[in-house]
Length: 276
Image (tube, rainbow, N blue to C red; front, side):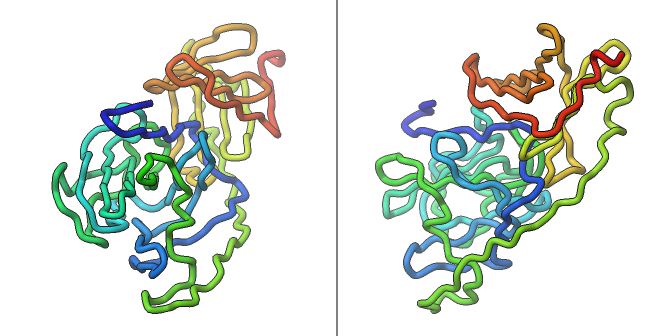
């Protein structure tokens, strides 16, 4: 979608990130790379990577209030609420023509038109907009306004200082995230319960009201609970801003602004409707 003079792909709230996660820890302090001139914008774990036309940025998960740094020097061209899902968001134009985008912030610490130095704290990590837990959604656009994978422009993991000309290879340890129990969220009857690659999803009936419950496997203590309704046999719908979620015993279908965006299949599921 075009916003002003710039294209901002959205971060999709599926409620949802990884159970067995290929995670990359970002450096504890901002470290510049001599070849890219960008630094990591936050400390945390890269919980979701770049996928062209689907997730055109990376997500760095951390605690609410974690400092967000400017990845490079530049001018703030947007600072405020983003209606397309990024919540409190910032965009910075850099001298090389690239633009970086910082979404879902708890609090913005700079304003539009302000000149920013590399490494300057510009915001605090949060979970505003279409988000299911505190993280930074970070995007990089070329001067032609094409989204590119930020990892290609960020320092390799293991770099300890900016003078290193031989950055170490990024490691991708396989991390198992513990399974949590979200039954306490459903104070009634569970109608559908399933797991996608990234999340646990339930449809619950409480006191004649239906609810959609989505729980990140990466952040199981911060679930999303939305009012839902029955739209057909064993099919339920929930709304969150411009996003709609259709849950069946087979999986979750996500729509945005009336158009189907993606479909996540349950690899484990239980349909309780016929058991009632």
